[in-house]
Image (tube, rainbow, N blue to C red; front, top):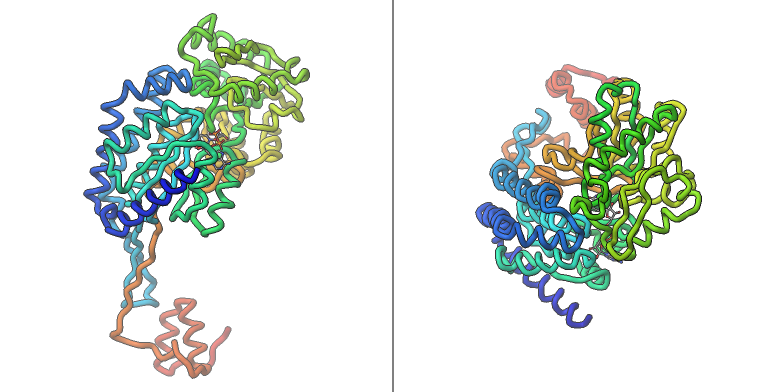
Length: 488
Ligand code: NAD
């Protein structure tokens, strides 16, 4: 660990020197690095796909959609928009401040630490880096130890494509993360669990370092079957894709559970079963299209959740597991007890509880009784229900009539609120996430207002009162001596 401390010290020193040299502030440098990220992914598509298969059993198509393609698109957007993003924003100052002018410039924080998670090890490592580089920072990445092949590949490729004095990778687990957190950073970007998020925030507090915490939680999905009955085939397909089609449900924005009216539950189950079969065949274990559970420890956690006898009794589909192959069959539960562990911790696996309500309007109260989710999904065409969801609940995002696509759409900010996270990124929001917006005001020495300065008197008080109200006409009257008294 002493050697690791030395490595971290040395890396930080070099990154700080590079930042101080001003190199990373140049738009040319930023563009060159973003272009190099695209090249790196393009050149190594097969290798990246292979490690995602080794670490998580991801099919190459899924890997391209969720990771490689996503990263290339994100870097391309940053590359294409950077010239626009870096332009200072002119502020329209009130007349009161005339002839001063104002603007906001985005300055890089400096030296950024990115800690990523294992479920999308390539995209969740490179996507924050793209934002940090676009904003002109130096970056150190520590990817997750639980996706060792992906982390090792990034550690090998990044130095051979990117500026090694400004962009660094360190491999390791929590012990290395602990060493990194003992150092002072200018910004910390963390993707992971709320539990570790608290550790990150406590460490950042030591140096008052700004943090972005991309956390998780339980994302509910409401199905208002009355209003979407004609489109139910698509609804069921989207839910199946959202639960089982992306890293086997090990995704922060995956459907955690479904809320439906009692009368519709059995129809929903009957509709889900053939869709699961159409996705993964009769034997999903052999389909090659269902990612595996990341580690034995995570498998055992899912197995514990499912083996609670009361939960086991609620299985209506699936439920088989193979520890050797880290496989959990796509599983549906009907009304597992609400006080069971599976209904109180993020499932992060291919198990879908269906919770029944007498009336779908009760879904609002149900969601409000839980911590604020990263995403709420609702299949409904009922405008009244939509309005209630938007105004009565709080979450990182709300998506109506679809699932997970909000993550892919970089015109929207992505991030949580409360337990599900702090801060946001993607597209322009990534640039903002890694920039300090500095207010610039340029005053004029051409004129001076005596009312700003002591000694104080009633005239000055009246002047300030009118100035705060931007009552310009009255101000002129006051200065011309045409106003005697002032009403408060
Ligand atoms: P995790 O919190 O266990 O680990 C995340 C990172 O923190 C890893 O790099 C790990 O090495 C590091 N870490 C672990 N222990 C640490 C410690 N004691 N001190 C400092 N760092 C430590 O999370 P995970 O298991 O990798 O990921 C799963 C969680 O991440 C879920 O809760 C999921 O919802 C969330 N997640 C969120 C997003 C998002 O974008 N909001 C994306 C993916 C995953």
